Image 1 (cartoon, rainbow, N blue to C red):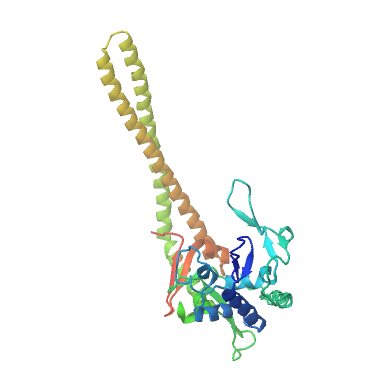
Image 2 (image 1 turned 180 degrees about the vertical axis):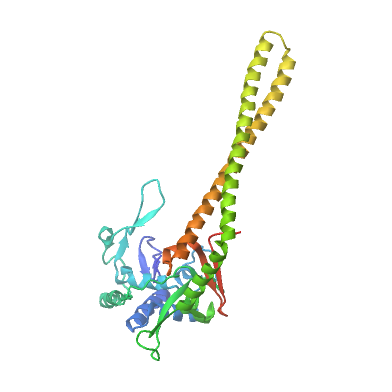
Length: 358
């Protein structure tokens, strides 16, 4: 159910304006028309402890510390929903196919829009102005700047992603006027109600992360370590060969048991051995056969694990080599090497990587 409306008691398929929540919708549109950004609208409603749609509508959702706070996406959805001018939009999404539950968003030309279907809350003129404001407010980086670590940096206190912010410092020269820094997104949206103010300069963070990686990689690829890698590779090949020889040995034993089972069956048929003797010998041979079969399965799995670890080691060596050869590592290489970077309120940086050098 869309915030601002409720279902009619007489006709469950009919929408009626909800007196309380429609006032919230009107207020959101008025704030936006007054020039207040969606982020600041979300923050104001959260500060006033106004229940967001998920709580007001009584949805059965998992409660977290952000459940009772207004999110930026919620505000944007309300500001762009034509239901508030009376138009009901259907078939925004469709299933990939009849067997799948996965849905894809359809283009606007495929939507089914029923005009004047519900009582309007917002005038069409006001709604159009808000949509125009959204189109004209798209921020682009004119220099095409690529934030090297964006998407990897999270707040070490609340766990939310850290957003990139740009600030003009008028005291600096023209070339150094713009300062780029990471700031906790929870604080940007909700202020101190969720997290505290802490930020970190992007340039300084890039230096810390790159120097950290270069330091551990340089230590790892010194001459002694490279010799150890070569010896490890030779040792791995010998180990796999030995394991394959073991598999061959057990396979021959299983083959011998299969022949023996045929022989004792012939002996029983020719009355050379009794039924009881046949059952006893057969049982013992089948137990041995299962033991050898299990051994082969175990050894095969062990070989796969060794090969996988060896492949991972070679892949890591290539990544290290690529990284050290670059004067300015690109974003893709860093995304492959780094799992996440945490920054705490006391500006401690913790780097978690996607590999193990032990």
